[in-house]
Amino acid sequence: MLQILACGVVIFPGLFFIFRRVLPSIFKQWTDADVVLVSERLVSSIHAIMATTAGVIVVSECSGNIMTDRYWLATYFVIWYGVPYMTYDIYAMYLSHYYRFRVKGHEEYKEHSLTTVNSFVRREFLLVLHHIALLTILLPVTLFFRRDQGDYFIGCLFLTELSTPFVSLGKILIQLGLQDCWVHKANGGMVLLSFFLCRIALFPYMYWVYGRHYGIPVYGVPFHLTLLVNLGNLCILAPQVYWFVLLCRKGWRLYQRQCHSTAAAGSQDSSPPPSPSPPSLTDNQPKGNH
Image (tube, rainbow, N blue to C red):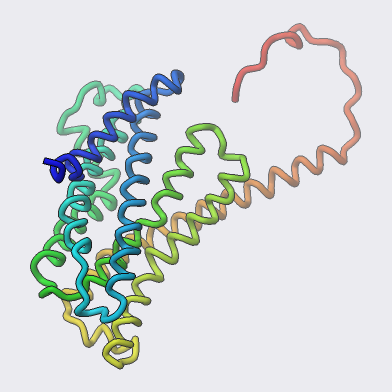
């Protein structure tokens, strides 16, 4: 009974449900889209912390012999938490997409339909494909095709989730209107650093560790592995590189915008003060929020 209650099938949808009920009572001005977005990000961060912790434990326990050392968490975390989370997250992403367009007043989003589902899949195709690939590749590999080897590398794959809390925190800070504070800027740096180290550089590292174990150079590792293993790693790595490029572009645009705003503020400070003008009839009117 305790295993069922602790299983991700219960935990992640349950947390999502709780956040959707609690957040509107705290942030009364938020729309349904805001609540669903932040709820999804909070649950995503919780799963990421769990996966990263599991990854650190598995890697440390299996660092003696990276091929034959076993640790139970490598398999059980995938079954009890990884698969349920990926399945839940597809649904949560759909809800976030649905309420975002419903709040904007799109007629076809007045209720759930095949049209809204199809629109979600088309707009978030890469994310949906990523989740399905993990369900159809990581799960069979973990359960059936490893021949009780490679727990160390499964633990390494868990570590790819390290960047997720920083990505989620950035979204939440924007939702709270804190995108101009130093915390958001520092978090942006952590997003790029953690994403690069744990979602891109991690794969060459795993190839290097494998080559060191068998005494072969890193460039010879792909030829030592099966085609299926190389294709599986490529399917996981390719979208990470694409998303990292998008993150770098977004960071560069924000940096340029900050530089332009700083330069504009400096030019205004150095310019002479304007001559006084006669009072306007609208001077005492309240200013709108922009």
